[in-house]
Amino acid sequence: MAIEADPHATPATVRAGPLTTPSIPETLALVLQGTSVLFANGETTERTIAAGERIAGSHGYRSTVVARWDGLTVRLEGEAGARHDIVPVTPTGIDMNKVMGAERAIDAICARAVTPEETRSRFARTAALPPVSLARFALAAAVGAAALSVVFGAEHPASVALVAISAGVGALIRRRLARVSRNVFVQPFAAALLAGVIGGLAQRHELSSPQALVTLCPCMVLVPGPHFLNGLGDLIHARVALGASRLTFALLVVAAISTGLLIGLWGVGATLPISPASRTVALPLDVAAAGFAIFAYSSFYSMPWRQLPLPILTGMAAHALRWSALALGASAYGAAFFACLFVGLVTTPLGNRLRLPFASLSFAAVVALIPGVFLFRMAAALVQIAGLGEKAPSALVSIILGDGASATIILMAMGLGLLAPKLLSERLGRASEPATNGGGLAHGR
Image (cartoon, rainbow, N blue to C red; front, side):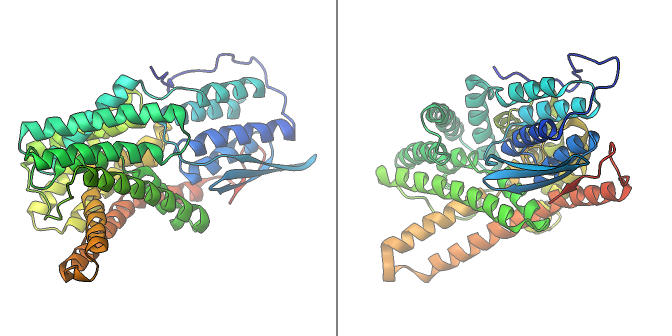
């Protein structure tokens, strides 16, 4: 069972008097350790850099933090000189509990309530926290995929049950593979392979819906949305190399999912139908199913139980807003933008207050809006073109272009809607910051 970081926890030892200022090497070690925990577990680059600045500035040092895909470089300057170091870390993980624990430890050291040694111990314990329990992880995958199938129009209980079984077993396989392989693409590939086999067999025996939701929905829960969002945020902040790396990683995960899905279908002699979007679902059912999907994704990201209602209620309200916008004639892009703008307005202050990573919190609330179906159908059309060669009908090219454009525009609309309130909050925050912080001016790159 995962150990949840208590947002109300106080430092184990409270000092009666002021602590001595740590040396540059001690402070540098603290900055490297704290920022690496945040960076590795889904925190935005802005918040990661700000955390390093807070630690350094509170002890009277100037800091420069440079984030790259394969590590963090930190330089500290003070009256006694300057020093820099690099910590190798890649931002491939998503764990809200670890981010919360690291942020609380940073609050304590910046308040000078604990010693550097105690803080480093807290960072180490936080980094070693286990993920959510296997039972919760498998249940979340099953519930989330089944809920998405309902959102996308599944009508038959047998189809929903097959979706849940496929996703749940896939989650068990993913956890098992995580113990034997560090390759981050093996897990989604294997889970998608299983989904392709089960979905293909269901289609051949006519157990699934015409839209092949039994095949697609277990793969939808594998889409790495927070990495897309963090990558887009880095690009907006002109961190081109890091943003491109994050987006490339996310696209490679999608490619691994698509490859596993198509190989699984091929193995049982099935194909992924290239069909129109699924049927419209009634508002109450759509909102309720979205709530279950949000619960699932929040569990994937190790969100503490007591905070689960926040993204669930926010996401359900956003789904109702999107449904209403579509009913009034709005485009899919416009409806997605306004729903995500609402979520961004709510999750930006919530994330700041609760020390939760913005990308994970906000994406969990809008997971049911992700256009994963378009991406997988586009992959299926590409495979068909490769198989048919010159005999491929021109309609397949139109499908690829149409699905690719739709997926891209919807993702961009969602990203901009979610990020706009956060960018405004950051700008207002910078405008209100004093020139100094704890005796030292902090710098970030």
